[in-house]
Image (cartoon, rainbow, N blue to C red; front, side):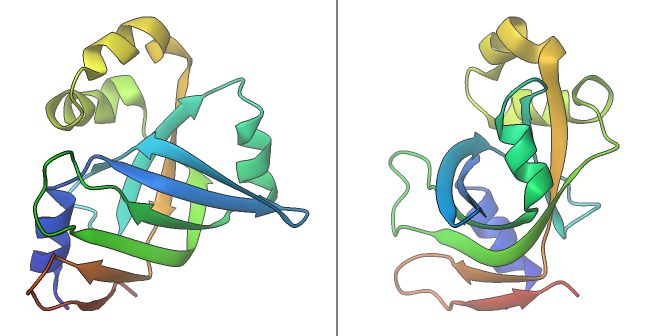
Length: 145
């Protein structure tokens, strides 16, 4: 699998189901994601800085995810990965990622207006990502390391 299939699937989604587990307690959250082509092995998402979820991220940064196709996307394209490392990012919403969110996540301006000042950025460092561009297309694992 090459980066073209990854980019094709990424173009069909702006959110993932992010799975965590601490003390044998699994949890899944839907989060909006953005991707920067200059750093292809990293997905970004944000969370409210005083959320209890941040403690979960800090306790066990080994996560799994699957993308969620945008409504109406034909062929059910998706990507999924396990053992992805989650870490707080040095990037900020205002200086680095807000334009990407506004471009790729519908109605994100409303989210930004409501809670933007309280958002912190996280990175998902990708190693192996299973990419399925949709029915009838070649699928496989993309290796970033």
